[in-house]
Each structure stands twice: as structure tokens, then as C-alpha cells.
Image 1 (cartoon, one colour):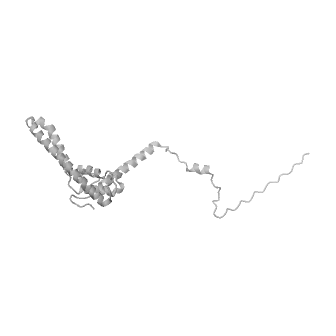
Image 2 (cartoon, one colour):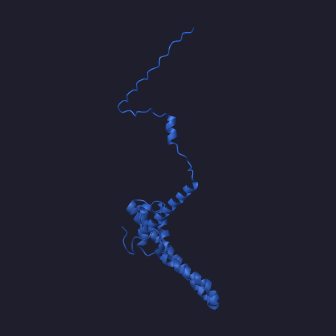
Image 3 (cartoon, helix red, strand yellow):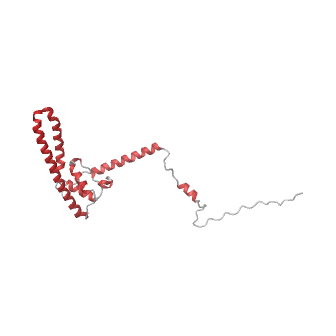
Length: 196
């Protein structure tokens, strides 16, 4: 006969009371914490993601376009932001630039030169010589005006900001070539008005 030691059931250990300020649960392991933070790099629904991206891009373009029309620099494209570029725009917009008037006239002359041989071939030679003189004369006046504008821009930028950063003068000259009505950002000063 085999005698076995009788096993008495163990009484459950009393739960330890939570310490003041404790979480009341065990701290997560590093592996568990990293797994919880991990997010998929590519969303599951790519079609929906592309749609959201297109909507966001369209909204940003609309805001940028509206900013160019109203002069709101915060939402303008980066190439138009900053006090230096605003000063350049105002300086260009406050003067009458020869190029903004010359280029539309030159375009009309070129169209006339194309149509004239069909309508009046006998007058074409005499008129073409006159148009060439006018066009080259206009180009020369535009170059002189751009040179004067360049000096004016460099002087004012140096007075206001101490130095002329790269691209500012070219930015102003390119703006001066454009017809005032079609310039973006839209002109915020009138002809003859002193820029702030």
C-alpha cells in the first residue's frame, strides 16, 4: 500500500493593492510598443489615396491662384514670396515700361507682315522696310529702358535691404516685359504711385 502525501488546495494569494500613482497594469515591452506605433507605409486603398492626393493638390493650386489675384503672400508660390520680391513688383508696376507696350505692337506688325503679301504685294517691299526699322528701333528702346529699370531696382533694393540677392533684378525685368493686365501676382500699386 502506497501512502501519498495529501495535497491540500492552495489558497489564492491576495492581490497586491495598487501603489499610489501606478498604472494598474504591467508596462509594455519595447517590442509591443514598437508594434503599436508601426503604421503601413502604403495605404490599403490606393485608388482612394490617389483621389485624396488629387483633391489636395487641386485645392492648393486654387488657393495659390487666388493668392496671386489678391496679393496674399502666405499662399503664393514660393518664387513670389518675400518683402524683396514684393518691393520689386511694386517698383515695376508703378512705372510705365516700354516693353509692355512694345511687344503687343510688334505682334501686330508681324501679323501684318504675314498678311500684306496676300493683299497688296506691290506695297509689301516698302512697308516691310519701314516695319523692320520700327521693330529694331523698338527693341533698342526696350533694351535701354530695361537697363534704366535694372539700375533703379538695384539702387532701391540696396537702400531697403542692404544687398541685392540673386534673381531679383531678372524677376523685375521679366515682369516689366509682361502686359500689366496679365501680370501675376496682380499689380497692387497704380502707375506713378510710390511703392511702400
